[in-house]
Image 1 (tube, rainbow, N blue to C red):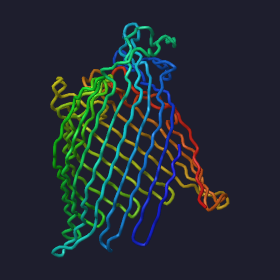
Image 2: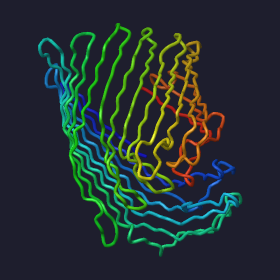
Image 3: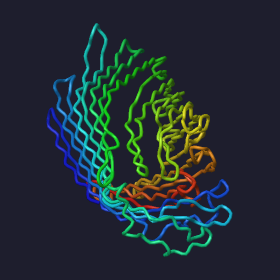
Image 4: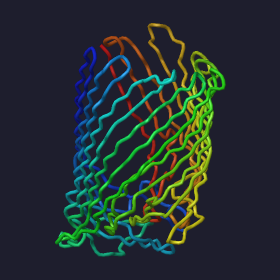
Length: 475
């Protein structure tokens, strides 16, 4: 990986440009399978693919921005981003498993010449104006995004039942170069969106602030696949997305707020069937309270309700959209200094999801991978040591995720899990002005857990214990 950047600052203007290149060649592992409603009882490092299962390619990204002060109250900013991902992959795809015998049915698949390009440009102006004695914090802008996904050669083998999950013997399934699927090759999906937006934070006085905003978006989507190429999608539409919020300061330490907003995200095409997915449209409302106990410790609580149309769900490689889904819940966060040496960061969320409309008959089901209960608690402690020993900081905590549904039909669940992390950091002036060393441990007790699922044959196995050492020096 190479990642240079350059920044310039003048009296009234600033600019930065950065570039990143990453080259990789990685094993491709689709995880484990479900047997009798639970992840298969096999060693958590057992794979159901072949040694040639891998993904290789490179990523490139350019980001740049320029900001100009117009006067003391107004500034304008131009932002540009470009990234490109090019890769190829090969994988024995698990199709099914016989739950009685453990017999495994697989297929040798490959995708060569994947090319994703995303280009984003935005220009906005922000500033403060006073009208009728009231302050307005304004943002007005325009942006454009173009996303293009292309896959050249798609290979799909024949289904073969040749392995057993309890006694794997690798080497029996190979990629056949004659299995090029011309009807699925040359897959193209291109989405262009252009939007104009305006936001106003209207300060009535020191206690009341009204937020008003709106975004008008025009999008175009084109796609298809095959040799010869067959157009499957050629659509365009316009949508207006409003937002409104109200903030009231009860005291200098306590604020309450309420908000409503809408969002819109075009979905791509299903990679397996090529079918175009309708765009996702969401509407969300939230009420909450924020309280500052002192200068160093804060508490926040919020109730939320979200409705989404055309939510994309994927089961065993086939992606479709759910007509409408809802989520309601509460979020609590606490953060700050308990003492001069001890800091805390804690969070809890309760989320209840439900499929409200679906042509596949899953109304009333919960959404895949959505836990009712999630929580985390982290502590960090500064150790009292002499100046000759440098500054030491020790910390750690736990992450908890409750039970989740594993597929759209809610036919199996993933168990709740708790994972611990820890770190120890050391600051010393041995090199330059400051040398910082930090030893990190993720999944400290090497817990086996399953964070998410893409269906009964694609259950993700959580990362094992990972220890890393990082260092930085200032001079």
